[in-house]
Image (cartoon, rainbow, N blue to C red; front, side, top):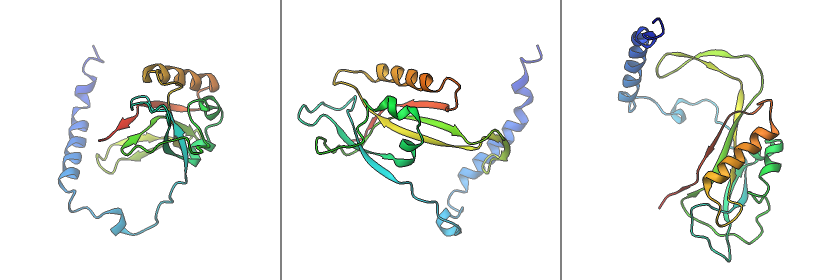
Length: 183
């Protein structure tokens, strides 16, 4: 019976966090932007043009692949993952592609830890503490193998590829997101 009311005991702490979050949202117009605060500018991430075969767009038989951008860092730090995705991504686009405005490809994102030391960091918004792990999150776009492959099938295959190349789970927090098409 002790665990039944565990969230009730945390109610006061969570209510305080909710109050802090509401105050943060209400004061959005009075908070200075990062640009106005000064300081250092984050470096821009180098990108590379690659092509993928989309899952949801109408397939053009003359130019079935769509040109998208991938981070060079994500491609270079992926280890064996990129080798597994070479059939789903073309790093040398050539001229056999088309441009699609408002198209974002499906992506596999993964967190690569750089150490084992975790630190408690206080949230600037809710003022609650959380564990922060050292490392970086990367993402790699991917596409279909054929015109008829469904996203859910590809998702299962990519997930299996990630687990196969890294059985020790050095890639943590792997997530796969579907492509988006904005009109």
